[in-house]
Length: 470
Image (cartoon, rainbow, N blue to C red; front, side, top):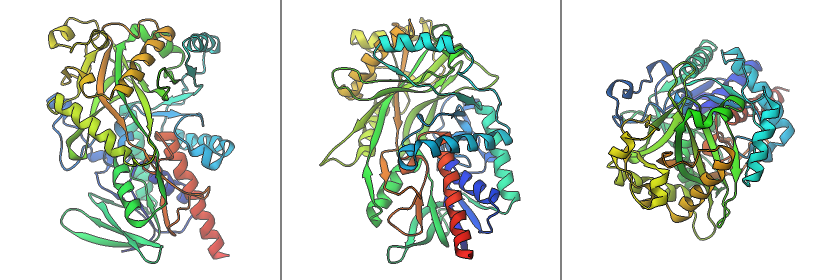
């Protein structure tokens, strides 16, 4: 099998690389290799079983066409300040221009035209004033909310568009190895567990998302792809009643707040806020269960959930931040007998575990029904737990009632994007013909910035095509 471009991973970065090549009129042959299934075949059985079935060989929520995007809350952050460090590589102005361009593509495929967080600037000022008083920074970020159920339809439309325009796709295959020759990548080796195939390509793009971060890190080490350990995020998913978050939900939809609480002064931030949303579970390799959250356009709960993430940066001699975070998750899973743990904030402050009876009597009812009441502090590192507690208490100044006794904390919430692949502004690595995009590259976080990186990659490949024809 021979192609001009092979893309490993059908998440936003890989998808938008292919879209931009098509829109530019490229004549290059393109193949997307995806471990999971097409959108129309992705189904989580939990809607019927009411509990996680730990699907094998992969979780349908995190794996398949569009990656975790199809089952996520589907929020597009329209600010270069949000979504990772790509602007530091390509420049703020270009990042802003690409966000605007990519947003228009999402609109073409059916994204909601309404933008959250821009309708009441005076109220935003009031919220920012309270944030400053609390020692937090409020990041201005307009949000386009796709909605979990709407995101699936949108990405299905993109899938059909790519197929109708000649992009080949191999589902059920994962990348097993690279084809390298004298510091040049010549393609990939893929397998479906039974058959192994070599795919030759002039350009190889690895865009395997957060789920593939650990695998890409090992690949970089094996083949001397220049990289460095970066940041790993360890935190919790917080759930409160909608009434507590009413003003912030209405004015901002998502409150992106950043703080550096004493005594450690690590960066702590809110992420992925879901008004009227539902807490969810995702399963990674090695049976690692992590917590997430999403929000539908039409179906609403009585709660709002969001994550609070503590960033950890390690220095010499330690260089395994992903493995560190996985160990935290594994220990938490052990305490919950393979389930997500949930604990009331007041019980954490009182130094006691939460019991099921206490949950049943609380105003805040868990939207993750199979979460196990327990003690997350028995597994969470002291540094991270202290940062999270202090940040929640600061949040209470911005959102009164946020630090109430009945506020729920779910664990573990982990974000694996710690392997930072070194590349230049043209997205070139030190291995010719090899490019690494999206969250697994360590440069992006979230749907929009991963999509933007794909658009830029498509443009760079088209420019090369034109140059070679000249």
